[in-house]
Image (cartoon, rainbow, N blue to C red):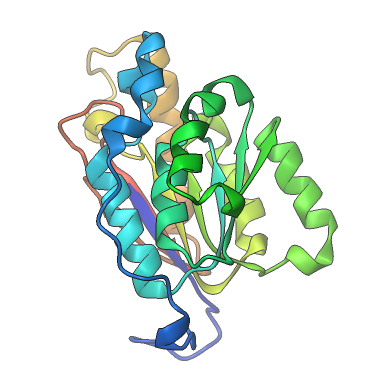
Length: 241
């Protein structure tokens, strides 16, 4: 997992910053959601183990959202909505999630659990290619810097392009989180390490993305080996702007 904090490189370093949200307006503390219930319908999918955000990762995101007082978020890559549920439970009642995925079918499997949790009103699901939907959001100047947080777990070759768009949508001081960025540790393996052709292509995409973020003066980033026991889930990159 990669975490990024968006920042202004021309400003003086800030080591601690409050978001200005009164404590009474923050989301109430909640126990971590029962992720297994949210994913029951996924058993119909043979690749479910590869496409679900693991529970420990979702709990980390939930805590982060509460600590930063996030209200408006974007999620690129939704699948059955496990991480959407975790986010919806963490943000205030008037918060919103713009949830983007190319398939409504899988999201509809998890939707009943989101509805049962009483947080479906926070979710604005948009079906289609993320690059196009993010471009539509950017077409409205009011959306620039309007989001506190973004989570990306989608098509890996487009991470760099998603990053460029999200830097404009997430406010300075907001957080961007990218999943799978270590790709099971393969990004650190020798070039001739035995990998499938598909894994080689994805590793190349993540190496390019990680290098891009590391050289980006507009973010502070940290790479976290969350859920490292899972090949596909290993690595979480967060950036704060």
